[in-house]
Every structure is written in structure tokens, then in C-alpha cells.
Amino acid sequence: MGGHRGRRRAVALVVALTALVATGAAANAAPTSGPTVWFFTGDATFGQVGPGDQAARLDPNPLHCEKGEDDCNLQGIAFAAGRLWVADATNGLRAIDPSTGRAVNRPNDGRYSSNPVPFDGRLWFTTVTRVESVHPPDTAASPPSVSLPGAFTEDVAASRHVLWVAGSGDGRTVGAAVGWYDPRTGTRRTARLPATGEVAPLVAPMDDTTAYVVTSPTGPDDTAPPSELFRVAIPASGSPQVSDLGPLSFGPGGIVAVDGHLWLNDVNASRLVELDPRGVPTGQVALGVGGDGQLVGAAGQLWYVGSARRGHDSLVVVDPRTGSITRTVPITLPGSEEVYLFTVIPGGH
Image 1 (tube, helix red, strand yellow):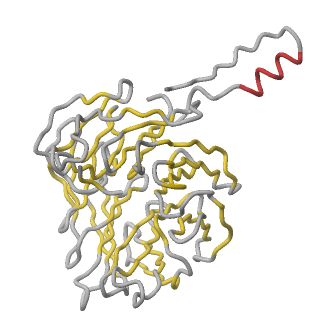
Image 2 (cartoon, rainbow, N blue to C red):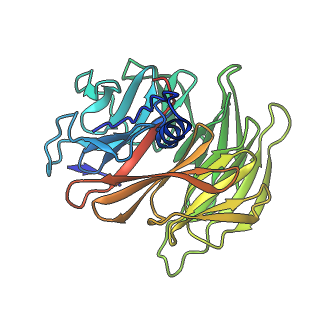
Image 3 (cartoon, rainbow, N blue to C red):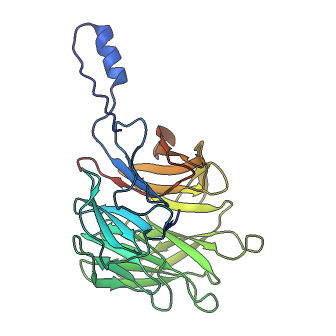
């Protein structure tokens, strides 16, 4: 099996018999609406954490992957058009009905090797040379696509109206680049970063005109320089502006922009780090699990899944306005499995 890295809803019925009973029921009430987290492991174990769940619920194998075999190669998961879409580089773009947890399409030729990003009614996937798009429920790529002249395409993220793409250059003469695509007008812009060498870029849009990019060297740890942070401003008209905000003092895993601030997980420590728009650290959140997990921004919250030890992951939800942990949910997995990727479905779906 290739790849990367029961619902219990407590509904409080408040009957106004006495103030004590009413107070106790309200204190024990669990939310019954809100976002739901869906995840999968490298061994194709799927699961979810609903808004009222106190522990993750597993659906071991909705895609009928053979455990321990290379018949599935899961690469990403996202929610679009009422379905969960799982990128399987071996069996195609698979659809799962989140209400039943069951696959609703068959293996197909829509094979993509990246995490899908929902935007403008489509799913977007990075390839080496371009970003392709799929219009669900179709599974085949169709126009438009986005490329970075002279650079690879390695990461993609979306603001409200714009798709952002980041990629590295040839490692010698051409530096990393950031692409900007507005499907309303078909406008495409490119900004060059002063980052050469072999780097892995991550992009986090702040809004439709500003994004932050982290470039991390991919060379040996003992010789690689620190990761670098850039701010990229690409207005609809005028020249792009790139600001080098300097090296980071920690190893970044993921980057999310929320409410004017940046949040990154420190892969070498059990924490999230908050940066202001200048890239200056302003706070941190102790996670209680490993810092080399997955970080997602959704529904105005920070969602993080990390591992305390093999087979024992946790979902940690953080309020970015206060920097406080609002929820921690254990994810107990078979054997030594770990959550590879997850997505957050908005409430009401």
C-alpha cells in the first residue's frame, strides 16, 4: 500500500425543571453542527471527527484498497460538489459520499499526484510543469491550467477570487516563482523570488493581492541554509512586489494565513508559531503532539493533526484570535498508522 504521510453526539435536552438540572445539561451539551474533519492514513484507513465527537470514528477501507499492497497510492483529499474527492495515483480520482462514507464512483483514469485544492467550482492539482483543473463530477483534467514560465509548479492555494501557485526554478540560474491567476478575467501574473538552489516552496494567500511564501532547502540537513520567508504582492495592475522577510529560526512544516497573521507548525518542536505581517514572531501554541504533522486553516480556525506516537494521533483545534486550544480529539489508528492528510468540511454538509 503506497502513499505519504462511532459517531457519538451528545444532544442536551434542557427541560426547565430546576436551575440545577438546566445548568448541568447545558454544561454537558456537545455541539451537533459545525465542520467535520475527514482524514486518511498511508495504509488507506479513513476516518472522521464530527462536531460533537469525543474520539475519531474510523471507516477502515471505503476504497477497498488491499492492505500492504501497492494497489492504492493516495495523494490527497478535498471536499467539492457535495463529495469528498480522493486523489489516488493508481486508481484515479475517487469520490466518497460523506453522509455514508462510501465510494460513489469507480476507478478511473483521472490520476493525480498531489493534494487537490477546491477553487472556482473546480479541483486543482499540481504537476511538474503546470497546475491542472478538474470540474467534478468529471475526473479528467480540462482547461484552464496554470503554469510558471521557467519554473516548476509545486504548491497551490486559493484566496477568495485568485489561485496562487508557487514553484522552484532550475536550481542554478532561475529562481523560485509565484503565479497569480484570476479566472474572472483570465489574467495571469508571475513574480520572481530571489531564491535559487533546490528549494521546496509553500504559498499562503492573505487575500487576493498578497501571499506569503516559505522556501525550504531540499539539500542535506547539515549543509542547508534556513528556510526563507517572502511577502508577494501582485495587484491586478502594476508590477509585482516581492519582499524578503528573512530566514526563519525554526523548521516550518505548513503555513496558513488567518486574520492578517501567519501560522506555521514547527517540525522540530511541539508548537504552532504565529508571525505578524512583517514575519516577526508574536506568539506560539504548545500542541502536546509532534510538530511535524499537518496544518489546515478552515472555518476561521486552525486545524492540526499530529502524532504523539505511532497509532495515536490527535486533532487539535486552535482559535487564531486568542491563540488558545478550543478542542483536542484523540485519533486511535490500527497498528502504527499515522494520519497522512485531512480536510475540513464546512458545517451543513
